[in-house]
Image (cartoon, rainbow, N blue to C red):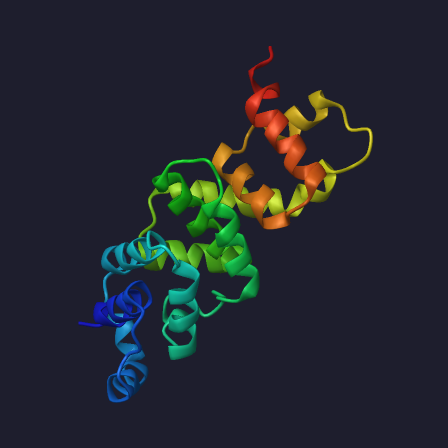
Length: 194
């Protein structure tokens, strides 16, 4: 059962042990078996991993084992993702909202084609897929949102079709103070003004 690759890495990080060298070799030699895991089970393993205290460490370990590329070859676990996950952990939102933000940030650097492939592979529900695609579209227009002298009405017009979680993910991914301020103003005030 190739889900044990994910479980071994998750427990290694959670419990602070090192996978025994022969077992680690077997895990690395058999990462191709990840292709045999159903999309639902694979998605569940990723969600469980993202719910842990240090998911970025587990993702980096999976990448080093070559396992992450069997989820999607373009997924990256690196310093950027670690920093963004740490930012998510300081957000004042529910644990399930943190999981969604982390999932979206994991997908942030994917192309639209890779997002579709990942969605198909993991059998993503339509709500999550819409949020990830909204984040992709926001990534493309975010420079417009930090233009000088932009009126609140212009910002509302640009943002009204996007889901709020995509905006929260963008503010973490781009780490721009003006962008964050404008997104917060939209989410907390401007979207409610008639």
